[in-house]
Length: 312
Ligand SMILES: [Zn+2]
Ligand SMILES: [Zn+2]
Image (spheres, rainbow, N blue to C red):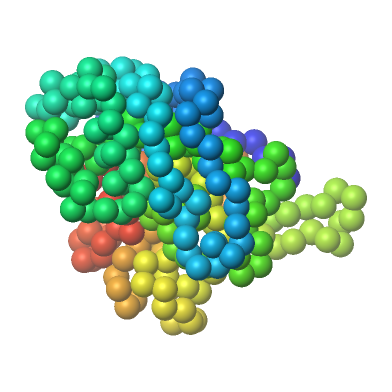
């Protein structure tokens, strides 16, 4: 299924044209998003030379174990340094990270690298105590370190995650009942955004045209996407017709909405691609839906995965 996907800047331009009020925020984060997108290809070779992802196992997936779980990331210090050298000057244009500039440089650029690899390992493992300890040792506020890793570790993990992607067709975790979790099958992070598939047209057989609407969750860290049941909450796992509610603007929503759970009150921004022409860049799109984040916050809803633009 060949689809035209918009780049970061094309997606941001499209959003800014429709919502001029968001333009200053979009512009503030544009260099970071563009650099992150470009860095993946730049670090790919160094990542492949250092770490190999284990082969996908349907058995492990059925138990809810992500591919990167327990994987040693020794050797990733070099590509992490490459990413940090490009990202830190941009990151430190923002107030909160700027206060930790020296400490961030010491950890990612000037250090021998073990601590930066351990920080990424703790992030992947969801090991909060380890992560906080490492942040403390590096003299960086844990939230700032998490924010920095969103841009320094992400391109490296995206390059690593590519090893698990088939050259064409559906990824192995999207087979029937293979991966049923709300977190990423590759790195274990919670999704930043979800999409509903466009309608599918089979050129050879018009009768096979499908209605689309299959839900996919998208990982903001390693950029993997996976299919997920629409009637299930990705956060608490409850399922049924009464579990998920939709919040959207009455006019001009352009397929943008929040899918939220009536039980645990978490939400995930969702784009119905059937209501849009081109497929947006997912990172830029998630940022471009922050007007809905504000509505959600007023209603007491929690984001499934807090994003960098509302962390400070
Ligand atoms: Zn992931
Ligand atoms: Zn829930």
